[in-house]
Length: 291
Image (tube, rainbow, N blue to C red):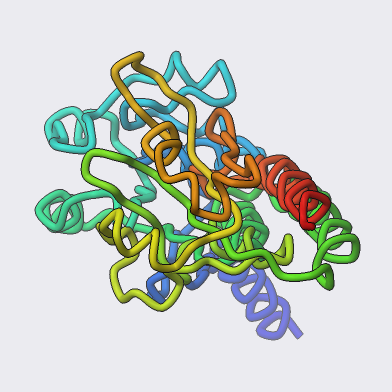
């Protein structure tokens, strides 16, 4: 009997310290021996996801532009998108590093991997992967309850938009992320998933690069019905104004040049539900303007 009790206690002790393992967005298994307490975020969208998953207080270091929620601005910085202060990273003694697969440079990723600290690659390509990011971070941080609630709320908002707009008449869309040079996004980017959610069609979805450069001529040839662009942060930025001279383009002819403000769609976070709602409303307006 004593042997059985001792064996049971040993099993229970081992189970209480069992590793927590999830699969990241690169398909790699990431394990921590106990819920992560000191996390470094290598992207603004990661910082926001960690907060939404209930782990904001665990973030000990972040990249520049980690400014949402507002309290994230107080997190010590460990670098920018061009360089990382490895000494600073080491000094912060993280037990988990979350990187942005396409936003951090290959050299940065190599340097961080060399530290031997568990590293999670974050790169949501679909809206539902934002929800699964929340639940996976909840597992790694031991904040499952908060994370699952946030994921459920996000999925409900997305489902509501899909029910309302998903079967509406398709609208051909050009999504502009920069005008000098002219850049857009392909069908593999999470923004394209938002476009599809609203019943839109990305005219450059088939391009191989995630953020390809395109020519004005290519856009004119595709003749989209709607043009989307972001805020003009500098008066020198032409933004969507570059298209106004092309009055025969369908989007210009019908006045369907729409600005989607803030970072509601540029960051793969729960706020994308709000950004997608704005996008859906603009596409519905474009449908109403059809003759």
